[in-house]
Length: 434
Ligand SMILES: *Cc1c(COP(=O)(O)O)cnc(C)c1O
Image (tube, rainbow, N blue to C red; front, side, top):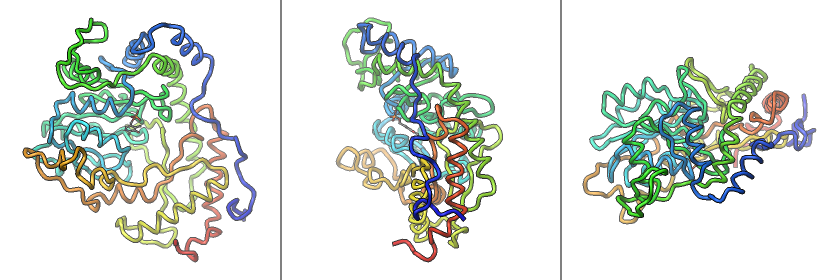
C-alpha cells in the first residue's frame, strides 16, 4: 500500500508536468501581429474571416462573431422571437448564462432535469415542462457531449418550439455524424480562453435561417439594420446591444481554428487512455458516450459512487447529499496533493442559484411579475438527477488537452487510481464530515 501524499507520502505527479491551455506557437504570433499592424482594430477583417472560416468548418450558412458566448445566447433568445414573459425551457444543470440569457431578454426560464447518464437535458421530461407561454427550448451540449437531438427536435416539432443550441463547450462534438450547432434554429459557441477554441474572450452565433440571422444582427450592434458590409445610417431601428468583438481576439481565434481538429483529436485520444487506465477502479463511475454521440471531451467527469462509502445511493438532495459532497471535497484535496489537476465544475444546480430563487432580475419582481406571463416553480427538489450529479462529480480538463499527451493523461489517471486504491487512508467513515 502506498502512502497518500496528503498523509505525507510521495506526490505521484511532479510539479509542472501538466502544461497550460491553449498551446501558443508561431501561427498565433503571425495572425495576432498582422492584426496589430492593421489599422482596423474594431470589427475588422479578421472578424469577417473568422465568421467565414467557422461557418465552413461547422457547416453553418450564417455566422456572427460576438464578444462572448453569453452575448450570442442572448441574441439567439431574441432572434427566435421570445418576448417579455415568454417561457423558455432549459436544462437544470449548466453554466449560469445558459439560463440568464433568457432573463436578458425579459423571458423566463423553466428548468428541466437532466438524464443521469449523460448529464444533458432529459428529452423524456421536456413535454411535461411545457406551459401555455413556452416559446423555445435551450439545449446545452454539456461538457462536449451532444444532446440527443432526434428526441429534442421531435418534441419541438410536435409542440411548435424554437430550438437554441448552447454549444459553448461543444466545438466539434457530433450526433449521428453531424456537428452540433446545425440541428436547432440557431446556436451559440464560446471563444473564452477555457473553451476548445480560444480567442481570449468572444463567441459565435450561428444559424442557417436568414430571418433569424437578421434579427440577431440587430441585437448584436446598436439595433441597427445592416450587415457589416453595408453602409451605416446611425439609426437605432430597435433595441440593440453591443456584442461585437474586436480584430485582435478574432485573429487569435482564427489561428487557433487552424489547429482545432488536432486539439479535438488529442482530447479524444487522451480521454481514451485516461479511461482505459481507470477501468476496474472502485469508488466512482466513468462518463458514458452513447452510440451515435461523439464527445469532444471538453471536460471529463467522474462521479463518486456513494455505496462504496457505505451511504444510501438515493439522490435525495438531503443529508446524504451533504455528506457525499463533503467527502468528495476530501477526495479532491487528496487528488490535488498527488498533483492531479481536478476541480468541481458547478456547485449549484441552476434553479438553486439566487438569481432564480429571488425571482427579481430587474426590480419589482420582473420578469416573473409581468401581467401576461404564467407561474413557474423553482422548487429545487424537482431536479434530483442534476443535484445528484452536482454533489458527486469530479472534473478533469487541462491534463487531457493539448499540448499534454498520452503520458500526462495516463499519469493523471494513475494519480486517481492511487487515491481510490488507498481510500481507507482518508478515513472517510471514521471521521464524519464536520
Ligand atoms: C462558457 C459557457 C457559456 C458562456 O460563454 P462566455 O463566452 O463565457 O460568455 C455559456 N454556456 C456554457 C455551457 C458555457 O460553458
